[in-house]
Image 1: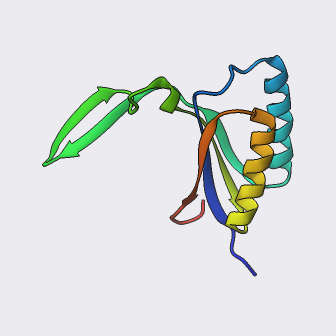
Image 2 (image 1 turned 135 degrees about the vertical axis):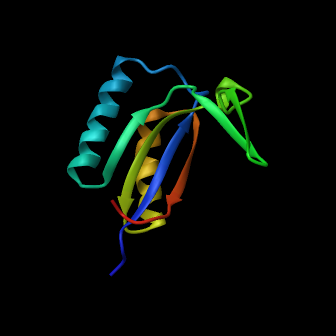
Amino acid sequence: MLMPMRYLMTTNGGGPAPDAALFAEMGELIHEMASAGVLLATGGLGQGLHISSRGGELSITDGPYAEAKETVVSFALIEVRSEEEALVMARRFWSVVGDGEGDVRPVFGPPE
């Protein structure tokens, strides 16, 4: 039996601006994933601050990205049985979103 694994799926800017139809379809997908017990958390992200630590000194700058198209704009934390299942969820997500870029990364640490 495979132990559940958590993955963080993120989207970066650069795709088309969302419209009412996309929000509705994404709402359906979020409901579907939550009902299946796969979706742990989801949300949109603002630009924020970038923190860099060197020799005990902190450097704080506006935003972690050089270009707006690189900004992580949303995330979904999912719990699945394998990387393959995470990719199934990612394919489903991108079938709704369309164009753009993002990442699927394993999350290490104790389950919540």
